[in-house]
Image 1 (cartoon, rainbow, N blue to C red):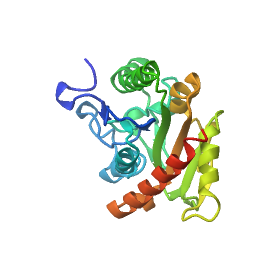
Image 2 (cartoon, helix red, strand yellow):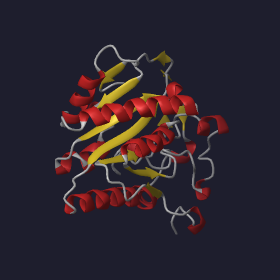
Image 3 (cartoon, rainbow, N blue to C red):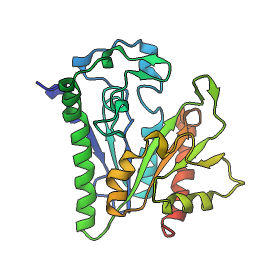
Image 4 (spheres, rainbow, N blue to C red):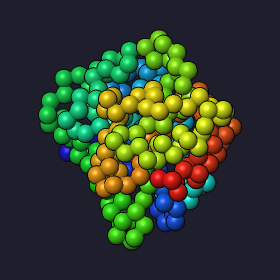
Length: 252
């Protein structure tokens, strides 16, 4: 028996499937929902509302950007604590036993059968849906641009972060280079390359799996979550990022 019930529905959501723009927006950490079969994973309500369970604001910003860019949006409907869809199954971080300062009791000591069940329930449908979407666009003669959307906490392990937006890339820096050039140095946000994370942190799995493997332009965007905690902030950031992408796509 799988970890999801029929009532919980498809773990993958697809919005604006008929979009004509080139961008596919991907939000791996869109939700903090847990499958009923796993309870609370032994975590408090406070922990489950925090950034360890999801990327606050990332889905809202992604939806706004999808509208501005006429982009398709694909996202995971369950918490990254169950399975982090930006990690391959063999990665310990796919089902973390500890996230920042929080132990995750429900992820401690998972045997291979339990890991496989989560992989089948959440990761494989997510991977396959995105792969199919990309391959369909390529077959239609309109190869897509992969943009993954994330948010990060302003304070991590007690240390404040001054970067506000991170433009992340792996081996293919074409789109990241163009976006950083378009952003310049005197814009409204503190923007940096491969911060607060980079490829060495294992955060570019989706880019590698679905962008680099097919030679498609790709980028990962990280937004400090205090900037997008309300609708006003989300609109401002979405407008800004959509504008950057529009300027940058021809160069990529």
